Image 1 (cartoon, one colour):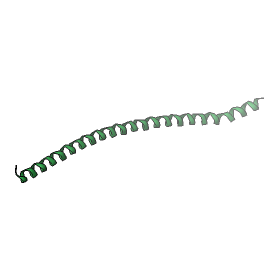
Image 2: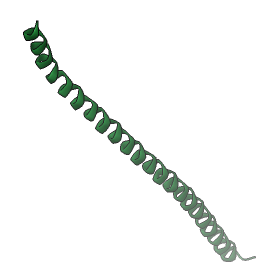
Image 3: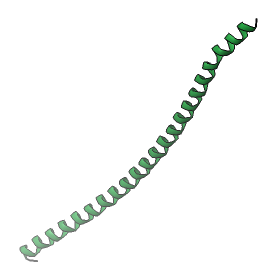
Image 4: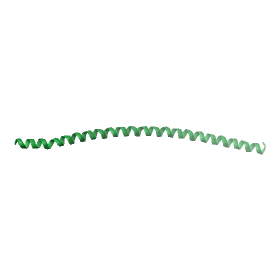
Length: 82
């Protein structure tokens, strides 16, 4: 082979290797993107669950405050009857 043919073959081989490496990297990045999308979805579900828990706790707190507000009235009423 002539020297120029060997050089051209080396360039083609180098281009092929770069192309293979780019495809591998693209595949890896696509998998990573999919994993991150699942993780984001999971965090979204966790946020929704936490919001529901907080909402329920606030409802319970409001109920307790209402009950506490009625206690002094009941105590005063009982004291008057004695």
